[in-house]
Each structure stands twice: as structure tokens, then as C-alpha cells.
Image (cartoon, rainbow, N blue to C red; front, side, top):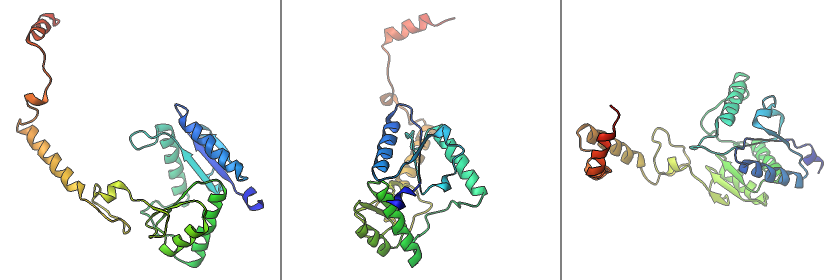
Length: 223
């Protein structure tokens, strides 16, 4: 329990309708049950928080068109800019973690700490398969693998990668089951050509107005 008492967790959230606030309450309650007292702040109160002072940072907000709302997005962009300028982080493609013994042990310790903090599942991404197997065997909660080998409790792939919707880069751990991008490219090219040639839209793609209503419309138009 002493180790858990030293575990520092931060929950930052933004909620408009109150749903994300309910999620925040559930997460915080789960942490407290495990002996962790999280620091909980709305996004506009968290500007001075150094995220690197915490062992676990949980950030939540609703999603609008796959992105966080502006208050959360602006907060994340400012933090990203700050930590990049200090050299704390270097955004890049997923890099394989846990490739040596010490790093593998640390990943296991981190996973156990997250379980003790109240996590109901953990995603293991881009780590050696045998390290993922050890972590999965040691945890009581499920592990979901993405680039972590066949031994996790579940598997995940990004839809865009899996169906070939993004064609410029394919991670090593992705298996592509379709090439949707070629179909989309052809559809867009056909649409553009059809519009330019006057083939779309036609009468069957348009809504109509009765003749008498159209005549009345013309008479009522302002001069």
C-alpha cells in the first residue's frame, strides 16, 4: 500500500453535457478504491500542471468528428509545444518499447501500477511478443494488443490501416485486409469528371416543386 500511496495520478477533463464528468467521477472513484487519490481538474484549471510530475495522466473529453473539442485540443497543443521545446518528448511513429531486459521489467511494473490504480484494461502497443505475454500472464485485467504479438487477451488494429484507407505508411504490425483507398480515389475521380461533364446531378437526383407552386413563387418574388 505504501507504493500505491506514492503513486501520483492526474485527471484532466472537459465536459459540456455532463457525460464526461460522470466518466471522470467513475475513474476517480476506481482510483480511490485502490488507494490512489487523484488530482482532478477541469481543463481550464490544469494549465499550470506539469504532466511529467505524475505517474498516470488521464485526459478525457467528448469527441467531435474524431477530435476533442477546442478547449481540450488547445490545451493539448500548448502542452505538446512546451514539452517539445524542453526536449521531453519527440513525436514520431510508434517506437518499439521493452526491447531489453530492464525496459521489459519497467513495462511490467508500469502495467501493475496501472492495474492497482483501477484500470479495467490495458493496451499494449509495439512491444516484443514475449514481453506482452509476461505482462498478460501477470495481470488480472485484460490486455489488448496492437503490435504486441498473439498472447494478449484481445487484438486491435486501426480501421484506416486495416482496410487500406491510409496508403502513405503502413506500420509493421498491420495486416491489410482491403485497399479501400484505391476505390475512394476512383470514386472521387469519377465524381469530378461526371460533374464537369454535366452528368451529375440529373433530374433523378433532384427534388421537385409542383408547377402551380412554382408559378406562385415567381409571382411572390420581391422586385
